Amino acid sequence: MREKKRHLWLKKYRMQKKAEKSEKINKVLVFCPWEWYNLINEKTFTKVWGVPMAQSRKISTAELRRQNRNNIYRYFYDAQTPKTKQDIANDLSLSLPTVTQNLRELMDAGLIEYAGLIDSNGGRRARSMQMCADVQFAVGIELSPKHIRLAAVNLRADVIAYEKIACPFSNDVSYRQRMARALEEFLDRFSLDRGRLLGVGITLPGIIDEENGMIEVVPVFGLRKMRLSLLTELLPYPVFVENDANAGGFAEWWNHASFETMAYLFIGKGVGGALLIDGKPYVGVQRRSAEFGHMCIASNGKVCSCGRHDCLEAYCSTARLSDDLDISVEDFFRGLHEGNEQYFAVWKNYLDALSVGINNIRMMMDCPVVVGGTITPYLEEYLPDLVARLSMRSSFDDDGSYLHLGRCGDRANCVGVALHFIADFMKSI
Ligand SMILES: [Zn+2]
Image (cartoon, rainbow, N blue to C red; front, side, top):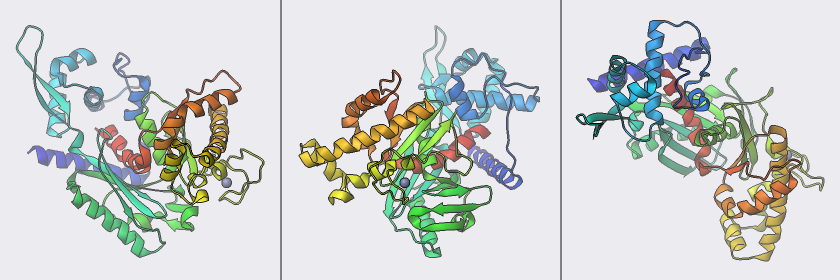
């Protein structure tokens, strides 16, 4: 019975997504009377529900009920420990019958479950409940020149399955079929229930025009003007396609709960980034914002992959630490750690250039800067050095503490594009 209701819920969600897509409806909720709802901060609320807390207008009883259900679910989402009915009634200032009714609905949908009995003050022990994180999940697929990465994330944004397969990109149907097959094999290998799959996100290092259904350009694939449908039509699930840096930025933003606005600097072979303003990517007029890799940071004449000179990428691509020396990035940092003097000289120049780039971002945006990408795991050891350089470069009294390392590693892009569906689903509850 419960399973059936859950399926009905999911079906409703998918139909709603389909309707929104076909009619291009931008659903905006503009009501939140719960200014007393002080358990969560404005940012967390807006992040999950997509509406500011303070806006208000008259709403129907049905909408009010839905909002109550949303708030109760969000309460469980934020809670670190199981909660009782009384906890919810007290903390959200709701009546017990309202709480009971909503809990029943959330349980029928399989979104919360009993977690055992806990002691209450003097009276009999109370039944506690918690959210079910694995009741739905989403998959993110990252396409890169040599690999396909797949990650499945649950409602709590935990990575429940991950795989990286060698598969060089080629602009033909056999590659797209290979991608579709990789997804099905991934679902089978990790025994992921397709009935619980909210959708599949695809991310790639290119400029995507979602409105016109086109991939404009993917320089590293040598690709120009491709219909998005060519990529999505082989997947029998709701599909969303996004630029990789924006996806990675979103994953890091989600994992840095205290940041409202942040700049994300991605460093791998390519250097890119994303700007998230109040959690929404600022993509720019021509969808080229946050191309931090192509900021001009010097005047030495070093050639960049874009054909221009002295871009940040020319100095801070990980190729400077690997390809240039004919070693791997891992070898470089091992040697550096062991005191190799040649590597030390390379690293000093690298950090110099990187600190110029990061300082420029900070000067423009005045917000936290998160560095992600393949460099991240190695950067931790040298963070104090980098922070000291940032402090010296700052024209103000910045001490460099605005710099943070990414928490999602090289999975950030596929996690971020999967989170699109998680965020959407949570708004729909
Ligand atoms: Zn460039």
